[in-house]
Amino acid sequence: MMQGNEACVEGAIAAGVRFFAGYPISPATEIAELMAEKLPRVGGAFIQMEDEIASMAAVIGASIGGVKSLTATSGPGFTLKQENLGYAAMVEIPCVIVNVQRGGPSTGMPTLPAQMDVMQSRWGTHGDHPVVVLCPSTVYECYVLTIKAVNIAEMLRVPVIVLSDAIVGHIREKVVLPDPGEIEIVERKKPLVPPEGYLPYRADEDGVPPFITYGKGYRYHITSNNYDEGGFPATNDHKVAHALINRLHAKIEKRRSEIIVTEEYMLDDAEVVIFAYGCTARSAYSAVETAREQGIRAGIIKALTLWPFPREVFRKLGGRVRTVIVPEMNMGQLVVEVEAALKDNPARVVPLNRVDGKMITPGQILDLVKEVI
Amino acid sequence: MVLGGIILATAAAVYDGLNATHNQSYGPEARGGASRSEVIISRGVIHYPEIEHPDVLVALNQEAADKFGLNVRDNGIFIADSRCKSVPSKNSVRFYRLPMVDTAYEVAGSELVTNIVALGALAAVTGVVSREALQKAVAASVPRGTEDLNLKALDRGFGLVK
Image (tube, rainbow over the protein chains, first blue to last red):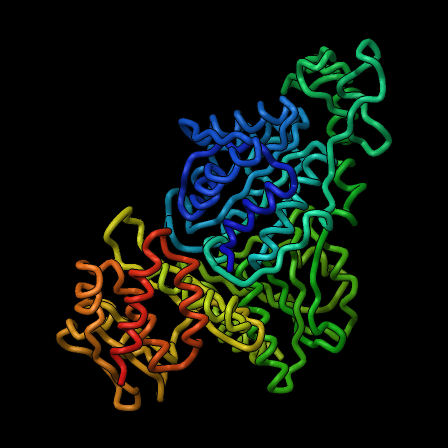
């Protein structure tokens, strides 16, 4: 038996995370508690910082220092982290932020679940920045997606967000964890050139520059201003800016197929499809099982990757699908993306929203399925 | 109550080979607020983890009995502590009033082991988990050094049901 938040911790440690800086906040606190307990035992370090802003700064610093780093928070803390998250995205520092979502806006409903930070996870910090967002709906997925988050962060030098929620974070389920030998662990790319030939932001063909720990004989400069390959400010150079911003996005786009994870259930003959993620996907599965027992052809697309948005999966829906229902514990954040992904498909997109701190029930989804079919 | 629910789910999922989920809810207070454990036990996969109409309700105080008593499913089971003065219950529900808090005081001198006494009573009434599984889950979950005390509390809980 393991709790979702606990599975994040186990996944992080299995992936090689050895530094956590954070500030406790419900419903993410267990992650900090367990990191404080477990990290020292594997030679890692835990710091409770004075606030969320400093936590994010410490995580970036530790990562530049060569250690895989992670922090965990919830909405109000996630807001505070945005400035430094943007910094990490710009200067390409691998790091993972777990956001266990609770009701908002502001301090909102501290102990109750919500999915209100979906857009913030993509666009919370300013500028057209690259970011990857993964979203678990089971305890097991908390484990594997945290590992995946660390791997993507290290592989692409990008901040990765694990967008959990108060239900998934607090639920306990039976999980069978893979043997450590079966887990794929990615390490950041080291430079192949000697120090005098090293340009810190000269990318390889995959768009990712090799990364060396500060103080290891390679001298380099990091700035959050637009920078050239040498890592020095190039704030008025349009060509450099164009190349930089395009590269930051291209390094993710090139790896879409490795980053994007979706799950399909009963899609083959489905007339109604439910697109769901996070805790709401659990309700969707319950609803579809009941629908199938009643002879209703319903199916599910579950997104485990929210950003980049998995638009490819919608191509699998033929003309048979009449309606796609998008249940979300927000006022309708991803429904717009679903509509865009289905722009060439006549299927109707119907949102189902709930914002009172309670899960969308299987009954609510089933009722809507029956209404639209 | 949260730990009690975890132990029940562990007994079912780890030691009895079933599936189980545990879901907790609590208020923003650091100490002293109402808390609730929801446990689902099933042979199949459990997706939706929340419970609106439980098959079995254990209420350890008046507030819980008042708030959830009428939610119990028809032909379900409702176990309330004997210290509850009035208990709202439907005729279609099997009702038990058991001195769980009093028994905890007898065993431990405080209400600390009430949750374990309640687990014994719940298992005795429902048979939803085996006694052996529950004993193993209790021993594995309680603070070290308190195993004997808690196992005694569990036995006393079983003993409350004739």
